[in-house]
View 1 (tube, rainbow, N blue to C red):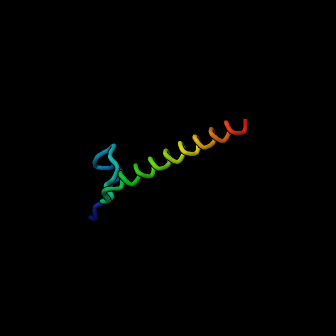
View 2: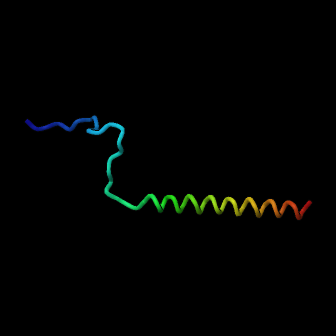
View 3: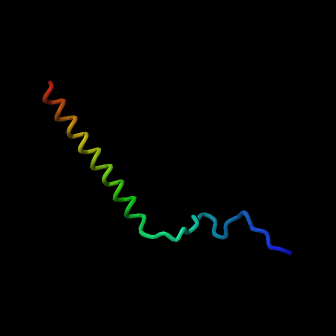
Length: 53
């Protein structure tokens, strides 16, 4: 008799551990860079509109 894999996780509600650590700060850095770039574009477009009117 061979054991069958179960379809239900042993700890419901938890994501499986991939073993990679430190990825959180990379994602946070990318998010912060995108926010900063968006703010820079917003300021630049507002300044450009003030000059044209």
